[in-house]
Length: 147
Length: 158
Image (cartoon, rainbow over all chains, first blue to last red; front, side, top):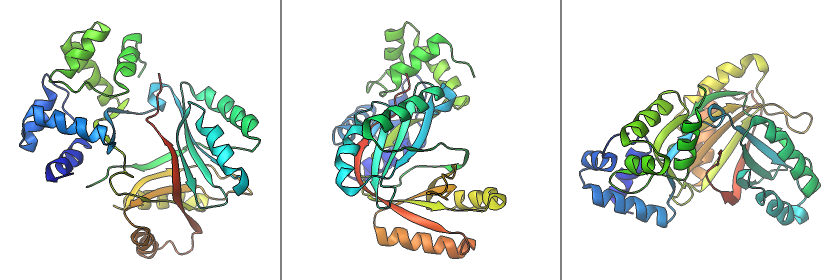
């Protein structure tokens, strides 16, 4: 990853033109040409430095459900439970954390009502309770990574 | 904002990513029966309404070296929650800050903040600086570093 890649990441995490030739427009601001910008984005996607190039949606405004959930699972059951949780397509991401509550995952569902039924299904499959911690208020969402 | 069927089709069409070609919006339009201009107008409207938070790059922060990812949770007295949440949200090292419900007795924490860094030591320094500079010494907190990441994909809504 060179300076140009870094500049692309920093700038295109802020915004991307919604216009006739958006890559050309973004490339101009970066001092490169359209083909180079497209090729560099493709390469960073292939190398999995980028997860996506496109829209970041607001789940609730789309009518979807979104929640952070935690589980407290004994060490010797951890692998099995993590695998079972990941098998649910509604689980968007899943991290182990170094705490008594050791499995943390985000559920994204088509409707808010679906959250509860998926949680119950996860509890039934794994045999452990799921602690549902939906967002109640948002103080800040930046989530940009400067490189 | 109530999404029309056509908007939902558009949202579904681009959720995996924009075409990497010189006329991406025209290409999307061809797939769903809209002109380029219509696609541009609908996407601009969805962004103005906040349905699309932003368009562009979504990074895999782990691969970019941000491997120390701390969820710092705070047990804030209810009457101080808004003030503390606002304060934390303004700190440059805090990438997300949300109020979430307590799950008593096991889980007393009601304010969640994420701090991402390249090294654990640095992240721990940020947190202790934060506590000092914002006067949070009296508020119980815990730091949960992420271990393994089992799964990361973009959420799919439609």
